[in-house]
Image (cartoon, rainbow, N blue to C red; front, side, top):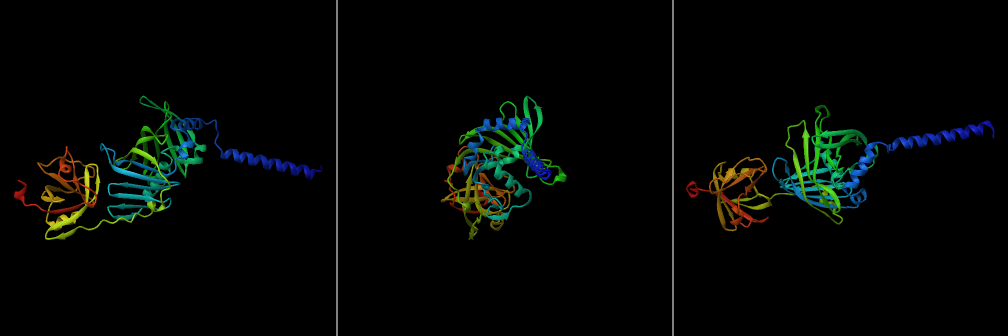
Length: 364
């Protein structure tokens, strides 16, 4: 073989070696402790195969302020690969894998900014049974950050680079379940971070999932939110229309002879939502603190109008009457105590209601 032929073979060998080196650099070093910890994590929750085989899901539970004992009833619809729909307390949030929308009591807005970023992240997280499978191939690039003692609890810390963000994952050393996931959120100059705490693991559909997830933005004045999972069921192929822009409208109540006629819009734990708004109270001449007569199916009760009480406030009985309050932008009736209004009114969604001003002497 002449010199030119030998040089050609050398260049081929060098090129092959470089290709192997590049391929190796793109793969994770399996000697990194992070890989062993991730493997043990997936073994603890049921395995990648079971998670990947779940398909479309419907999740029932509660969502609301973490400081309340229990949030409002909620249903999550999840369609592979990334579509999401959340229904809770007069609100519908949809994400079709590209665009997101929120319908709040009949008024629809398109999601943008941090809210859209959150929808993208949580769509993947929820679809993968709230597991690390959401990160896909990025798991191969995970890096072990060390061990941390938090009170009596030992944790392994790993960092997962995903979509230009480093996610810090805290995995319990005894069970190899995720305790929390921490990542930058919002304006980088503000240094705010999102902390997702995962707790109370239970088996759903053959996979161990956190039954309680708390979402807290550290560095921003905002109450943490809590998602409680009551049940998870697999579904057939959910229709794409479920994840489109939610075109929901709330019909206006009718006013005649100083009587307002509306309907029950929704019924949730502790609250009954109507299509009546604060401006209708003004039209009836009912100011905050005053009484109104509430009629359902021919049965009546005097209730006090209390304005701008925070969402989720269960209240206390005002003498021998109940409270009705302004829940932006609709009204809600509070239920509390044993029996209360539910013994008087058989509340059902779509039921007709009538409201009129109550004379002062009739409530004494």
